[in-house]
Image (tube, rainbow, N blue to C red; front, side, top):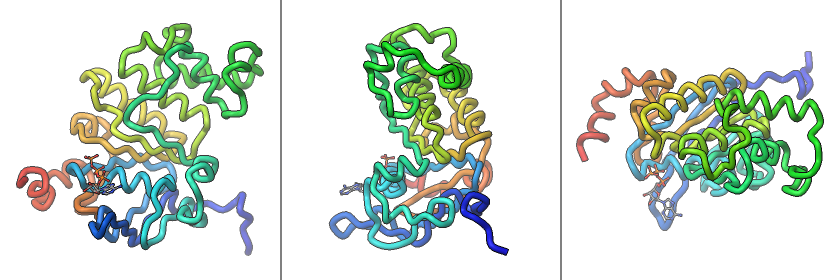
Amino acid sequence: MSVSVAEYKPKSILYLNGVTKSFDGFKAINNLSLDIRPGELRAIIGPNGAGKSTMMDIITGKTKPDEGEVKFKDLTDLTKHDEADIANLGIGRKFQKPTVIESLTVWENLELALSGRRGVWQTLFFKLADSDAERVASTLTLVGLEERKADYAQNLSHGQKQWLEIGMLIMQDPELLLIDEPAAGMTDYETLQTAKLLKDISQKHSVVVVEHDMDFIRALDTKVTVLHEGSVLAEGTLDVVSADPRVIEVYLGR
Ligand SMILES: Nc1ncnc2c1ncn2[C@@H]1O[C@H](COP(=O)(O)OP(=O)(O)OP(=O)(O)O)[C@@H](O)[C@H]1O
């Protein structure tokens, strides 16, 4: 029996197999394989220089691998697409530094992110369709910023700006979110709130998050992949990987 593309249920949301990328002969990514299931929340850890950012760059089309497969939903070969295409396919990326528009309110920033089809001018001077306003409102609730909706983004704390930017990504409704070090520079409270937020988001979207903060990783309570020298060193719960002698060696033996 044949299955239409619309009915097809992928086994993996993201599949990397044997991916290698060298810079001037140095293998930043070395035979890397990774399999993320639809709806999964996956944490990626690893010491400095392990290849985490390069891996994210390869998934999002910023960097082309020298070898290996990079597949989205089993069927789409991401190595054949550029960054803009990959964003349109449904992969959203949040970089470490927030890039919210400081001179717009929280609400306006979310509105602006709605689809990219409306410019700043329309956002400020035209009324939103009810369905769009509902989406902005539900995202505000999700990221915990209802009470700050009329405030200018410049008046938010660092953590709140990160939540706003995560909300802006959600407005584009990506199937897979890639999030780079969200807890960097956050207070302990904000760190735990961010872990809770990503757990909530993973109810509807697949999420891959790179982070160094172990309190954050523990609070995520999810499968962890440890990268080292461009490949997977260990995978499992945080308790399992942190008891692995190879992981201890990599983190403590330096
Ligand atoms: N464009 C580039 N040219 C040369 N070397 C690069 C380039 N990008 C990354 N590298 C090297 O590849 C290795 C992996 O870097 P990458 O930034 O992916 O690691 P990372 O795990 O993200 O590190 P960190 O935790 O410090 O952000 C490093 O040794 C880095 O110096």
